[in-house]
Amino acid sequence: MGSTFEIADRPMFGRLARPPMTPATDPRIRPALREALAKFGLDGFQEPPLVDRHGPLERVLEAVRLQHDNFEGFLDALMDGRSVERDDVEETSAFVSGEDGHQIEVRIYRPRDVTGPLDAVIYMHGGGMAILNTFNKVHTRWLVDMASAGLVSVNIDFRNSYTPQGLNPFPTGLQDCATAVQWVHENRSGLGISRLALHGDSGGGNLVLATALKAQREAWVEMIDGVYASVPYTSGATAWPLERRLRELPSLVELDGYTITTAGTDLQTFIYDPTGEHAENPLAWPYYAQAKDLEGLPPHRIVVEELDPLRDDGIAYFHKLQQAGISVTGRVNLGLVHAAEMVFHEALADDYALRLADVKQFTQTL
Image (tube, rainbow, N blue to C red; front, side):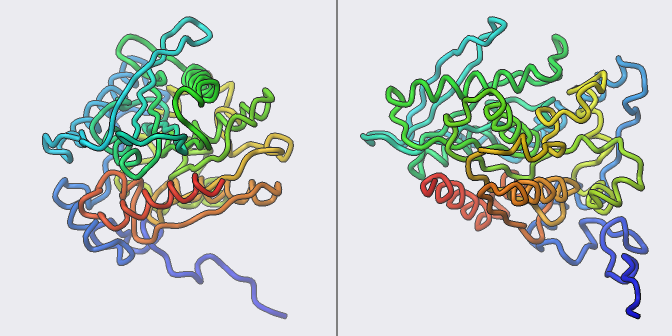
């Protein structure tokens, strides 16, 4: 009789190794990325916040505010004052009225002096659905580069679940995204758009997947031609017991602290759904989608990073789509941490170019 395979028989990496590895010592990481992380002191384990979701609300909100400020400062430092404007791209904007009367700003980038309908990508930014500015330079550079590559790119200023003025928990941000997507579809002709894909990173990956699920549930999914989710946060599992994380989504343990921490992400998870009443709602957490939720969805592409705590979130959703018979393709970017090619675009210039080409190829073959 054959022996039982034990996880201990596998090579252990990250926090599962003895002694635990960090980005500085993990042999899987790209050398150029390791150097870039070291410049910002990100090559060790990142420290979790000093408060968790069970702490006083004012301390939780202060911790989330610090996350926002620190990430924005880091992204701004990466851009080092450089302009993101390009002579070959033109920008316009519009305001779309949400169901509650909120005005959602939509910025549209298009190749200058190009006539005729073009394929379009609607972008939803990362930040755990809770933080980061929609129109910061890192996000804007990505939209401008997509337009320079020949796409119409659209940036949606959905409401984060955290703002200094108050909280906008689920489903506020998702509803903003859904409203804006419907507006773009209804104005395809005027915007000069042919095929229309959704694209997002991390928390934005959650939102593009959830927008497609919402569209399927509400019978307007035909407005969306495809969905491209990068490093999506699908599970809301950061507060799960250790045993469950190891069993279902082990990357949350193996790679905890590789540029992002599960404890820090859990504060964003809490702010997104403070009561926990949506903990297994597929529109909040697509990980819980069933076959009936996935039926009729358009083609998807799921891209994850090998050294990302959220790696297994994306892989799990890929498998759900595949088992439901949805057209889906996927890729694991070896040697990279969470959203590395988006953030460290200079150190990983080839990966950034590959991502840009991949988004364009996906959209143009829908």
